[in-house]
Image 1 (tube, one colour):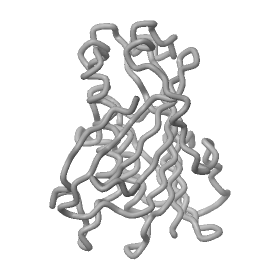
Image 2 (cartoon, rainbow, N blue to C red):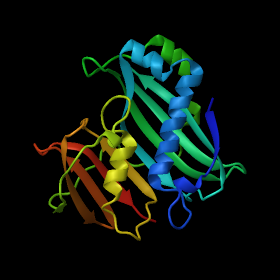
Image 3 (tube, one colour):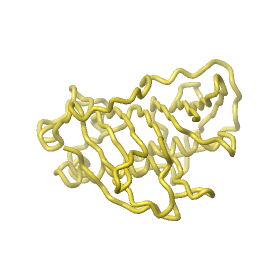
Image 4 (spheres, rainbow, N blue to C red):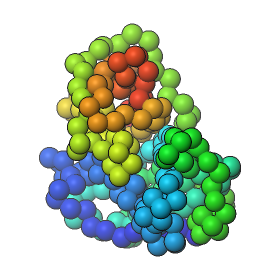
Length: 238
């Protein structure tokens, strides 16, 4: 079954045109997945006690229409499968009238936070979450892998600050998207987003952004000083 969180789009979540920002959309998805865990017995604190955490590996987001200020929305999430240390979770955002605004596919890795290695999902979590393959999205969400084009423009580096971190003490997955999106043109409106999280960035790490515009899309890579990507994204418009 689907887990649902209801909300009303706040003034603090929208842009100058009263559309919800893309990082606010992703925050809703992240929060709803977290609330799902809280309400089914797989809480944040329970995972901390176990020394483990769910870490997102990649996601693909389609925006049919941006939620707008004062809209009453339902944010839905459901796991479709678990395989070993991997969980496959999908999302949708709908109006209370049932109009689908946003859909998202995501892959999560269950991590031993001490060893920083993937671990098999415990049976108690498999039972608590359940799986719903019959609810799998029919939309073509695109490849999980984001292939960054060659060359592009190197942007000024910056350092990771405390405001970028989450309870796992590395950069939160929504923060990566927010940091990458600032390189898009001011008039750009993302309709499709594919992101891949490749390496964890921590406090004071220096990040070297690179951007490429190709075939009507924008690509952003946030790299380490050694040239390894922390994060890559493909932003597509309408």
